[in-house]
Length: 338
Image (cartoon, rainbow, N blue to C red; front, side, top):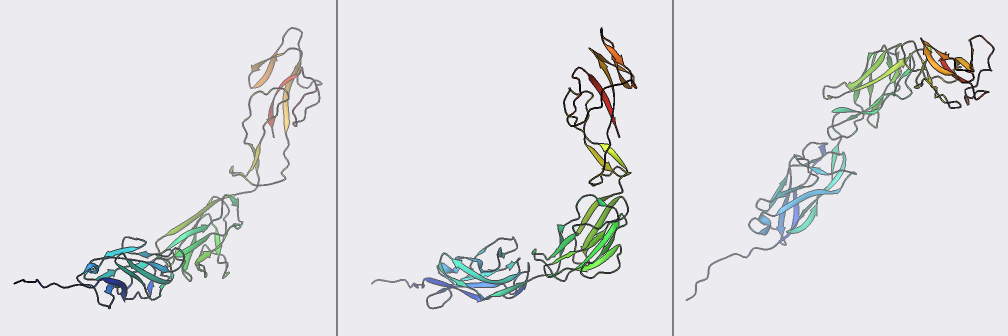
C-alpha cells in the first residue's frame, strides 16, 4: 500500500490592501491609529502562512506637497517594515503641511494607494531669522531694512497668527508694529501674517551698540533671535585710512584716502564733504642729499648746491593729480595736514 502525507496548497499573494487608512494629523505628529496594510491572495484572503506572511512592505508618498515625505521615529523618507502574519503596521507621520495620498508597495504583491488625508500646521515652536538692519546707521534714525522673523512649527511650516515679542535691549531704541502703529516703545508684541512672518519698525537710540531681541510670546517657543547694529554721530573729524610711505618717486601718485568720522571714531557715510589738503615741504636746487634733522626733514649741502630756506621764494605748489613738479631737478618731501 502507499501512504500519502496530507499537505495544503497555499494560494499565491496577489495584492496589498490598506486595512487602517491614514487619518488627519498635525505636522510632525504620528498618525493615530497606526496605518496598517495587509497582503491578500486573489480571492481576498490575508496570507498568514505563505510567502506574504512575512514579506516586506514599504510606505511612501504618492501625492503630496513639494518635499513632503513619510517619516518614522528615525526620520526616514520611506518607511519599510516586515509583515507579521500578512499584516504590516506603520508608525509614521509627515513634516510638511498639506494633503497626502500614500502608496504601499511590496516585491511580493501589487501596490495599493490610501485615501487622502490632511497634515495641518502645528503650534509655533521657534523663530527663524529672515532679515536684519545691516551695519552702522545714523543715531535716532530708523533702519532701512526692518528686522523680520518667521514663526515655524516643529516640522518647519510657517505659522500664521503667532505672537512675537520684540525688545530693544540696549542703545535706547524704540519700536513700532508697522501693521498696528502705536506710540514707540522699548518693547512691542506683534502677530505673524499669513506667511508666518513678523517685523518691526526700529528707531535707533542716540549712541553706542544697539541690540534688539525677538522671541515667541508663548511658552512653546524656545528660540531668541538677536539683532544688533551700531550708530554714528555727526561728522567731527577726518582720518587718513591709507598707508603713506616716507618717500615717493618724482611723478608718482600719492595714495591718499580719508574717512569722515564722528567724535568716537565711528565712520560716517557722507558724500560731498569738502576736504582741504596742505603740502608742507622743503626743497633745494642742485644735487642735494636728504638727511634727517629732528622731526622735520632737512638737506645736507653738496658741492655746488644751494639750500633754499622756508619762506624764501619757491616754485609754485604742485597739484596732486598728477603730483609733478615744474623742474625735474627739484626733490622734495612733505607732511600732509588737514
